[in-house]
Length: 304
Image (cartoon, rainbow, N blue to C red):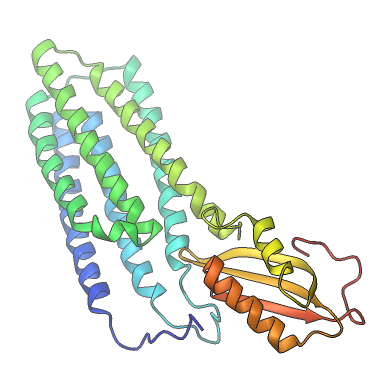
């Protein structure tokens, strides 16, 4: 079975990834403190907005770090499916927080459009340039990990967004220095807010799908899967089908199988398991076998 992995010995790659995440958290928290101080001193809302977004990234990395470690725990009596969904839950928390922050920044940016304040352009440009370097370093630290989980992918995209935000702040600070155009600061704040909202929406959709036990969007069409199973010799009907993700990278299938009276249940089960693994890469399946004598009454093809 695919769940019989050994979890008792630390994975060197996982530990190395944890260290990279730890370094990324440290540099992002340091950058956030510097940006907030500089934003208050300079009067730049855009710089404070970028700092708050950066802080959310640091907190996201903290949650991701905790979730990565928790997800590696083996199944136990209280969590019989294991802890793999810890990272999915953490991703939901991260994206929800980002959406709230982005809406707050949008409200502040709109208020500044009608009440612009004086801004120290040089402080904005210098601090944003430092932020751009640190955001780029952080993105490089977690780039490899971004393919492993929703959390790390979100953190990577957030750091890319931070880098782009820093570029926007540098441009805004330069325009303030050259033309004293104070409205550029709230305009950039609104742009950063919109960018965060857009990426949060794109990121939260697959997270919700996993938590809602949706059919995997990268898997085969459900009808194709059912048709292939029904083609197995000895299978009369299939109903109560559930195809879902137990964790981000692990799909599962549950179904009731009505077998022909003369069929060998053990052979049918082995044939179905082999089909699901070899053709559809479904290593976790729970199949309940029925005969015509004890079959479900008026069963639904999909779900209960």
